[in-house]
Length: 80
Image (cartoon, rainbow, N blue to C red; front, side):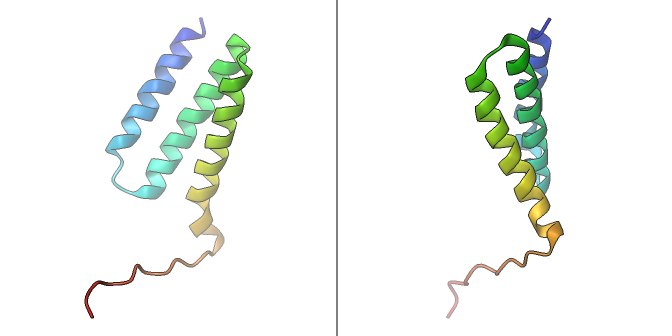
């Protein structure tokens, strides 16, 4: 039964490499991590749960950070 969740999580994470915008990439990877957490819960694998809780939290937080008003600085140009 839980195998299909693992496969969906794998497909979701793999599909994130086709995302062109960084915020979308992080959201898709966050969703994949949530699916992996579900899989970990079903198979009672604490390392899978904890590792993906960290990944999901960071991915979702960083994708929401600009929406919370954070300003980003442009990268310095090599042109003088």
